[in-house]
Amino acid sequence: MQAALRWLQARADNMAVGFLTVMFLSFILQIVSRYVLNHPLGWTLELCLTMWLWVVFWGSAFLLTDQDHVRFDMLYLTGNVRVRRVLALVSAVAILVGFVAALPATFDYITFYKIKKSATLGIRLDYVFSVYGIFAVAVIARYALRAWQLARGGTPDEPQEPEPR
Image (cartoon, rainbow, N blue to C red; front, side):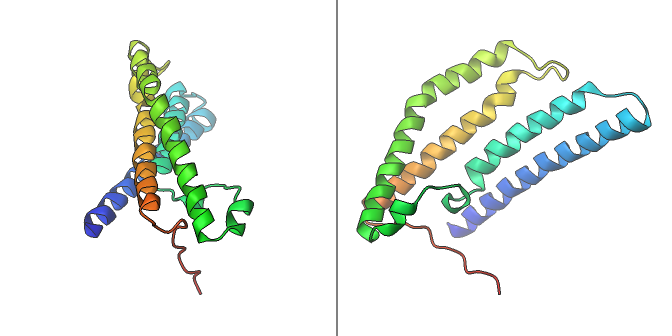
């Protein structure tokens, strides 16, 4: 199971690298076409924006851990393990409920955009914004698992990787 999860994590990393590569190459092409050839390309900006949208939500869904996010945890850290477990469970359930409640409207909004296309590339906007649906489902799965682990007495804090020497 761990090998399969590591393989999936590596593929998620590969996808993010691919998005960033496309964004970077598009950016370089825009610079060359604008300042060397004196012929700006409109589609490169749209491609950069789309890739940025995808890399942000893809990375947030599959690459970041709870430790990577900004947290206001001064009160949380002052409590003992039992208090932290309760607070972590309340937080996980609140996030889970919020995303589950928003999911139908999220998918409705994304599917509504099938009638529109992007300005220069002509990509259907439901494809462009579908990454948010992927993100929402991933967050729901992550926090459902987190709430389940905490309810069963799991540790409230993720193990921290040791500092490199």
